[in-house]
Amino acid sequence: MQNIENVIFDLGGVILDIDYNLTRVAFEKLGVLHFNEMYSLATADRLFKNLEIGTISEEYFYQEFNNCTGLNLTADEIRVAWNAMLLSFREESLKFLSSVGTRYRIFLLSNTNFIHLNSFKKIFHQQKREKLFEEYFEQAFYSCEIGWRKPDTECYNWVIKKLNIDPNRTLFIDDSQFNIEGAKKAGLQTIQLLPGMKIEDLGL
Image 1 (spheres, rainbow, N blue to C red):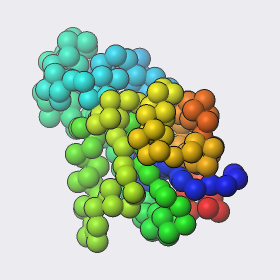
Image 2: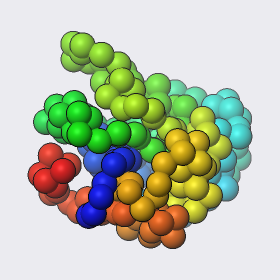
Image 3: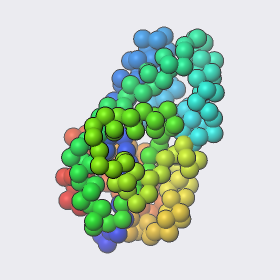
Image 4: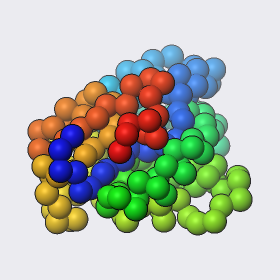
């Protein structure tokens, strides 16, 4: 890392603990036997991509999910299973954000959808907080709000242009190899957060 002025953090697996397997198991219990073909760490089908870039409503997603699976699940059943992957915030990582924000301009870039967005905000406020989650960052970008998702190079380019920052002086931190590769194509410096690694241990 050289001449870093800005740091862009991912959310899931970096600041918020997640376990995709919990969602897969939850859907399997509901009769969705091939969930990994619809959504995984590596890929997402058209329905889930559209959900993550905000081009479809929550209600339409539930309807189409049933159409795709041939099931007749309720919205609550789908919502609970979909949110099962969301665990808890890493408290030490949150403290670190407050510290690192005094040395760099820090931002958030997350592939997420409005269902998860509402859920993890509730998780965040299960503990008494002095500020909102987004207030840890100068600006937070969610794919469902900006219409772009990682690892598409256009997503990173959109953020770079929006912030008017130099990608060569910007560090991107994510736990996904695919997202890291996309960021590199956009000229960002990168760190892949591997299992067991914490942002507070990166020496920033």
